[in-house]
Length: 463
Image (cartoon, rainbow, N blue to C red; front, side):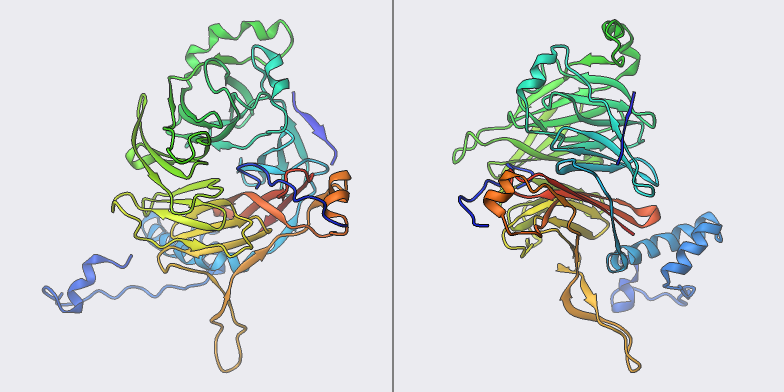
């Protein structure tokens, strides 16, 4: 089934791709003067704050479960703070593919990606080998021909990593594949979206939600036991066998008074603890939904920065949503009923925040200028580079913001490039997607040039 791939003067300002491209323990308070003091405080064993020591011990299983759990938690917090400055880049060759919009780790060496040129593929980050995955077709195949130029904007794995959700050959449809085989399971092409799918989120192992440019969110139920009687027609034409499903519920984003025609759903994020779904629309609003058997909207609030709100992530540890926009990241702590965490400015020349991810208290920001930034939400400041150690002192913060600059990637010097960017041999890549493999301390980053007419790609493994 899978096919192998071998691996000067500006005239008019070109368009940017629409939407995408473009705690200390409470129990120790008594020691500070309030409440009874303990008669004898137990001494904690000394901790070796070495990442090499941590990785070696984890490899050989040097602790029992209880001891390892406490040490593991402490060292993970330390590692997430120190890892970014230790990462080095190795670029991956993607050939002539155009702009990687979405990515997810499948295992320790394979990453699945989706591109603007509507290609779904798996790349082996060790060998660089690329395997194309066939896209799923609608019942009425002609519909996909009318949807050129969108591509695959979303790839998400369910919590147990047994199913993968992404776009179909028709970008309006939701395609579900089984893992680890990537065999097709079903396609949501019946009574679903009427425009491109921009975002997908899993609420559970069998329930997913998709958000579309048509201003709707759709809830889908995957039940393999009920698919057997709906797939027979595919075998007659020699195509992969999969079912065609319809959503259990479809809800429209409310129209804003200021910009009622631009309520396109751009990003989704799930708060699994509370069965809540956050959604960001391009009219500058954040929407919160209660997600059970149907979707029930709880609130809609105007975002402080309304230009190009194209990415959204959720921190389970802190119950905070983060929204990436043209030049800022805004934080929403809905438990407080107000925005009590000040926004951060990306300071990247107004090219926008293009990808976001949370791990513990650190948020990783992929920008439109080809750089990665790291922000500590607890300290409310960016991570800084460390100054070089001397004989008199150990290394410490240098005062300079830690910034990882990604490589050049590949750029097609086509007519658009000649007419509008001739002479610009080096063009920064927008980092549309990034994903961590935390057990192995690896970061996959990918994207491509920001202007809509430019054709190119970037992919890199940071480890």
